[in-house]
Structure formats: C-alpha cells, structure tokens
Length: 305
Image (cartoon, rainbow, N blue to C red; front, side, top):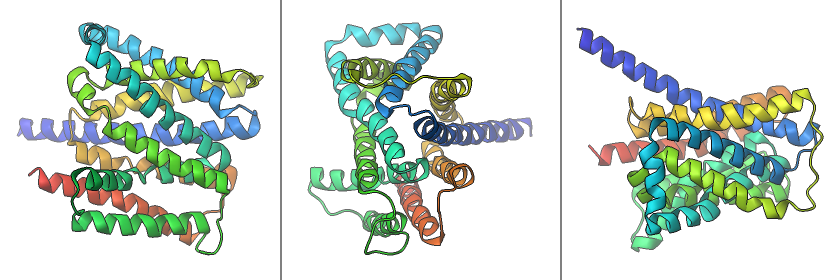
C-alpha cells in the first residue's frame, strides 16, 4: 500500500512541476511585455541579458550537480560544432523571435503562435521522409490552420486583428521553435538538457552582443529591475529546471500536454493586465491550436505503447 501511495505522490509531484514550469513561462512573457510597453526596453537587449544571465545560472547549477558532463561536452569536437550550430540556428532565433512577437503583438498571441511548431515539425518530417502524414497529422494541420485564422483575424477573415509585423514574428517564433525542438536531440541524449541549454544560451547571448550597437540601454528603476530578475531567474532558470525535473516522475507526453498552461496563463494575464481583446473567436482559435499539441502527444504515447 505504501508503494502505491509513494508512486501516486511522485506522479503528483511530477504533474506539479510540469505545470509550474509553463506557468512561470507564461508569467515571464507578461513581464517582458510590461518591460517593452512601460519601460521602453528593446527586445534585443532583453534577449541578450536573459540568455547570458540565465545561461550562467544554468551552468552554475550544472557544475554543482553534474560537473563531469558539463566539461565532457567541450572535449568532443563534433559535439562542439553541433552546439555552436544549435546556439545560433535554434536557441538564439527561438528566443529573439518570441520576444519580438511579444513586442509587436502581445504575450498571449506570441505564446499561442509558438505552439504551431508541432505542425511545422509534421510538415518537415513528411518532406524529409517523403511520405504522407498520418491521418492524425492531417487533422492537426487542419486544426492549426483554422485556429490560427480565428486567432489573428478575430473571426473576420478579410483582415488581421493584430499587426502584420506581429503576425510575421509569431510565425517565425513557431518556425524557430520547431528547429529548436528538432536539431539538438542527439546532444540532449548525450549530455543532458542542462548542459546543452545552458551553454547554448550563453553562446547565443554572447553572439548577440555585437549587434546591440546603437540599441539604447534602458534606464531601469526598482520595479523594472524586479521584472527583469523575474524573467531571468523564475521565467528561465526555474521554469526550465521544473520542466526537466518533471520528466523524472511523469512521461514526456504528459509534460507536453501540461505545457498548455503557458499560453493559457499568458492569455488570462494579458486580458487582465493589458486589457487585450480576447473574444470567442480568439478563444476557439487558441483551443484548436493547443489541440494540435494534445493530439500529437497522445498519438506519440499510443505509438510507443
């Protein structure tokens, strides 16, 4: 009986961690939007600071918990090359496009459009293996297209309800997130997520530094510094660690499904704090887009049984 109770407690712990991570990501998007709108912080500057700061924090955690793995990565030339490519073709674009999408639309829309990445992965895999997508994949594509149309048009299909620039960056967020998801799988298997994500963030952030020339350094007060610290520590370090820790107790498919708390959190907060208009068309569109992630997670779970 005690084993059953312990197993249930571990599962509940995993679910709690898998929810806490996306919740923090959702709050982080709102904090970033506040920095952009109220304190005139440039997205490029925030991305650079976030990646370098969070990268250092993740690496410090990694060196305390798994020092050998953190060093081993830099002893293999092939792994170094893959890490550098991932840093600048996956990690940096995923971070930059997401915050640019928040800047030119809002945190809710940017986060929801980010969840189109599974659809792009479906298309990529179908083209790469030159085979027709499964029925569930085709259904996911249809849901995503309808959901996106409702989300960005407010149900009036003849015009966009968000700026063209915001929609553009939102689509780039989905694309870069798809690359971020596909590319580092071998690295993650060999060296773990903390080492790969930590080094990639630090490299990507340092690589962005030369391009900040001419970008104004914001004048921060106490409130904006608190928001910045939240984005760095809670919205990045703890969010990643919570999600990674959840995988010790629950299946990746469950963690993926619970990731829906990120856009839901961002949406609720955007409506409450920034009075973003979010009616029934946007709500339905959001549910359809999130439904594609759920379908893919469930299909993956069944295929692995």
